[in-house]
Image 1 (cartoon, rainbow, N blue to C red):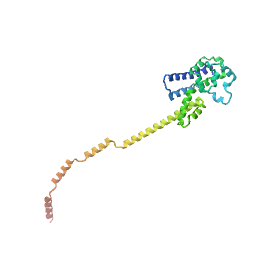
Image 2 (cartoon, rainbow, N blue to C red):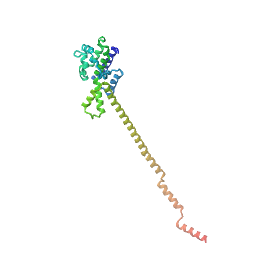
Image 3 (cartoon, one colour):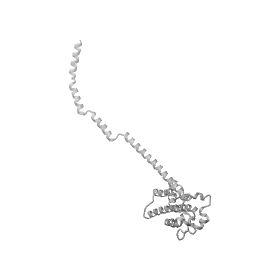
Image 4 (cartoon, rainbow, N blue to C red):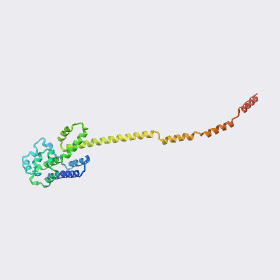
Length: 256
């Protein structure tokens, strides 16, 4: 890979983090979504250290004699050489070098003094180191939440410190996935509860329904004055006891 392309990686990474740093200084609070956007850009632009796994099994590129000699001559700032920076732990490097100094190095370094076989490895290692802070802080927060804070924070830090940036991103993505599933389940449960409420509401008579039923019964029931009038008419039409007796005697006589 051309040296310019290698240093372009470092320019992208350092510029992104300079922007974040400036926003935070002005009061902007980074949320998980913002952090994931930044971390996922490292995947898009291939800014992760792809040589780290190989370093565990074979001679490390930064232990090469030629690289050691050259890196001691390259100064990242007034007090720190590239050789020293490569060997610093990430948390120490974060305190020793600013994002702007990484960017200055990427812009100004003379490609002719850098060895071909070390270009990509060095650029990716520096990208890994300068972004370690943001990856570590968000991954630690995600890991604590994934374990429901049941694991002591010191143990969590030990686990996190043994992961590279790509693994730390996966921890953050795992937390996001768990939250998404939890929210989906809660949403489904909420919809189910609403449907149950609607079903109960439909089966239970409403006040208006009860009123209509009551009104119907009232209309169908004859009013008292009509009942009294009908009884009076029946009484008038019905024969008296004496008339009824006379009719009965006449009927008996005729039958004889």
